Structures are given as C-alpha cells and as structure tokens.
Image (cartoon, rainbow, N blue to C red; front, side):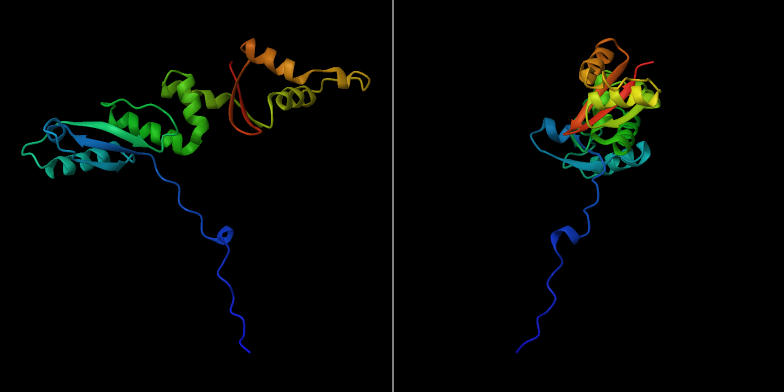
Length: 187
C-alpha cells in the first residue's frame, strides 16, 4: 500500500499576481511613417525614466536619426484617456492617481473632463462606499441624529432622497460594481 502524497495547493492558495503598473506604448514615428512598427511598452513611473526609455527606443530604431515619437497605446489606466502627445509628466501623474484610486479614479477623472487637479481635489470630499445610494441617505440621516418615529420609518423612500440629493447637486455618485457605490460631496 502506498502512502498518499499531499496534493498541490488549491488555486485559491496560490500567490496573487502583482498589479500591473499603468504603461504606455511609445512608437518611433520615423519607422511608423516608413511602414515599419518599432516601439516599446514603458511603465509610467517618472517622466525622466520614461524619457530615458523613449531615447533608448529611438536609438534602436531601424531608421537612422529617429527623433520623433508618439503614444500609440496604453493600458492599466482603467479607461482614462491619454492623447498621442500627452506630456510624460501628465502620464506619470495620472498613472499614480489610477494606481491609488483604481477604476473609481478613472471615472472621477473622466467626470471632470480629464482634469487631474479637479479629480484629485474631489477626493477631499469623499463620503465613502455604500451598497446603494439609499444606504448612503439612510446612514447620513441616522448618523446626524435625525429622529424618525418608528411608525414612519417604513414610509421613508431613501432611494428617492438620495436621488434628490444627487439631482440637487449635493452629491456625486459613481458605481464601480455590484453594491459598490462611491459617494462624494460637491461642496
């Protein structure tokens, strides 16, 4: 009789994969304009490091004296938009913001017309994460000490109250998933 060997660990026990840092694909325009694809994926770390990588990519170009480049693709920015000639400072600042706030950061960034300063400032007025808009409205009123008689409690439409707060401009709401509602004050 053989002794059973321990089985391999279950997938749930496996080490988590590291998050991918936002990155950009920078293409050599001299090569591109001559029908040749030449470029490099570069992590959006610091503007100096990105520019150093771009210089190295241009030095390796199949065409001599290549000096022009453009951002032709990007990933890890959770849907935030970058232009072809975005400054590396903007790219890296946005990457840091997205790394910190994830998909919510991208939604807020888009809400403010791709204005990173406004998006960053909005997090000063972050009210929290709730399962629904109604949960936010109910928690707000209970936390502020509003006395609700027991006989009336079931007649309050918390969803309508939250909707009125949003339509009235008191709050901004972003849904990032099922029962994942993020509320910001609009002061």
